[in-house]
Image (cartoon, rainbow, N blue to C red; front, side, top):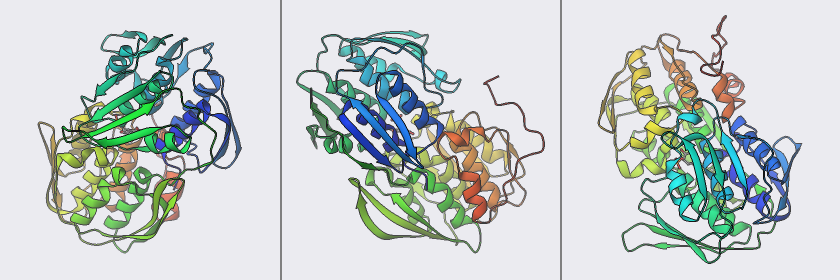
Length: 434
Ligand code: S3P
C-alpha cells in the first residue's frame, strides 16, 4: 500500500518546523503530498527525495517560515491547504494560496474563523473560498476553540497555529477525529495533552514555542487506500487478498467495523506498532455481505471511506443505511450526491434522505454499465472502478487522472490482482482544468 496521506502531509510539515534533518520512509508520493513538499520548499525548508518513498526534510524551526515569493498552489489537497494555513497564521508573513477547481470550491471559513482569532488576517473570495491571502499574526494570542464540525483538518490547523503562539492553545472536539497531528507532535518533542472534556468530547492542548527536534518517521500504509483492495476482495468471487502494513489507528478504522457487521470475511494479522501508529496486515476473502445500519457517530472514523462502503452496500443483500453524512458534501466533490448519482446509473436502488444515504443492495453483482463522472475526486474514481470489477457490465469513469492525488499505483496494483482495468480509446480532456 502507498503511504498514509494524512501522515505523509504531517511528516513533511512537522519536519519543516523541527530543527535538524527528518528522515521519512514510506512517504506517499501522490500529487497531494508533493504539493505540500513544494509549498514547504517555498517557505524555506528543504524537502528532498532520496529514494522510493524516502525523503529528507531539513527543518527551519518553529517561527522561521520565510515569505513565499509566489502563490502556494496546493492542487487538490484540502489537508495541505488547511494545515498550511494553520502554520502561516502565526508567522508574520503574507502568503497567497490557491488550488485546483475542486479545492477552490471547498469551504475555508472553517479554518479562517479560528485562525483569525489568533490575530491572522485573511482576504478570501466570496464564501471564504480560495484563492486567499493570509497575513500571519506578529503577536499571536492563544485560543481555546470548540470545533463546530468534526474535522481533523480544522483541529490540526489550530494546533499548528498554536506552536508559534505563547501559552497553551486548546481545541475541544465533540467527536474524536484522527489524531495523527497529536501523535506526531509528541514524537517531535512537543507537549500535547488530550483529556476528556466535561461535555463528553475531547480537549486537546498544545504548549506554544516547543523546540521540535527532527525525528525519523515510518509512514504506515494508508487504510483509506487499502479500503479499495479490501472491498474488491470481498465482492469479487474467489478473491483472497492480504494487504500488508496498513495503519489501523482506531480513529481511522470505522470501515473495518462496518464490513465486519456486514458479514465480511476480514482478519487482522500480525498486529504491531510502527512509528507510533498501530499497523496490521489485513486479509479479506470474498463472500456474501448483508446490509447494515451505520450510525452517524462512526462517520469521523471513516469519513473518506463512504464511497467504497457504498459499493460494498450495493453488492450486499438488503438495505444499508449510512447516517449523518453532511460532511461528505464538502469533500473533493459533493460525495453524497456523487455516490447516489453513480449508484443509480449503475442500476442500484439508492436514496438520499437529509444527510443519510440509503442503498438497496442487490445481493449479488450490481448491473453496472455506466459512465461515471469523477468530478476531480480520486475516491469516486477508485470506488466506481471497484464496483465495475463485480458488476455485470463494465463501469467506465470519465477521468482517471485524479487517482494520482492519493494512489498513483492503483491501476497497476489492481491489475496485478487480476482486475481488468484499461484506458478508454479516447478520453475527454481533464475535467475543469482546461
Ligand atoms: C484529513 C481529515 C479529513 C479527511 C481528509 C484528511 C486529515 O478531512 O476527509 O481526507 O488528514 O486531517 P476533515 O478534517 O475535513 O474531516
